[in-house]
Length: 366
Ligand SMILES: Cc1ncc(COP(=O)(O)O)c(C=O)c1O
Image: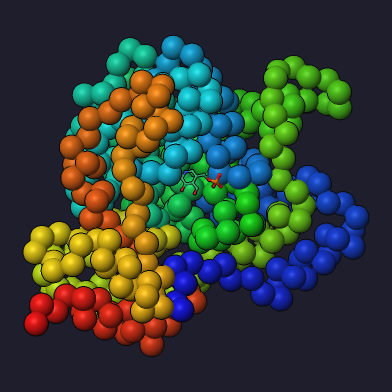
């Protein structure tokens, strides 16, 4: 079986965890501080605040930006649920802007049409490991004095015009879930250059405590452990190399799939470095198998393959029940054709060949 994702954990991570266990300091401590410093430095950001997961990172970042009831946050509809749920958890309303047909990211040309007097933030997602088209998004938001929060959960190691994902908007959030380009098992990080936002984020993470048993706002326990941070430090040192391997695999897959009628490999803007968290192919007519048949046949062949997100978020029951609506015709049209193939660094040239051969076989009509 070629799995769809596989974390790479080796001796470095084992040694790092062993050291923390031997120290007896398991909760947030010196390793978290070191991980935050290293992560901020890697991105060129002033502050990094480590939290329990990417959802907590989004929640805290939104709260730190003052997002609350009566306000709207603009997000794309093709993303993981947490992009919308964290807006709702703040008491605000997610407003959907359609996606671009080739990058699957927020379409900046449609952004102005959904911005209202209530818009308090724009939150583009760097989907599948490629950044959103940030320059026009930032221009549209900054013209109106609206902050931009990057959902960079999937984009560790990606770049845009020579700058790293996470260093493009006012604040950015990462996830270190087990399948991500770098992992701490679960885990998340908020990054910003704004001292005030960083201070608020630290307070929300830690029950609003600037000092022990002094609570100046109602926050959470969203603290990362030193065990997670030690793994994160070991992983961060290897991130760039892994992204190179993901990109080499993506190039080889795209070369193999190029020219198969009815399959559209992922596109990469020439000012982007796609970090290929996921390698997403779009099935179109006249491909002779349905997306569901492709997924089933490849899985039976021992090739990890799965559909991407099943529907735009506004069609999920949780949002329908809350009367959160959206109208994004491009998302509606492309989502049913999207499926994912393995691209992680555990995939080698022989596996790429096997994947391409299996897809070619599905494309045969004789
Ligand atoms: C785009 C996006 N946002 C947010 C999250 C939430 O991150 P986590 O699973 O670490 O809570 C994810 C996680 O998969 C994600 O893909």
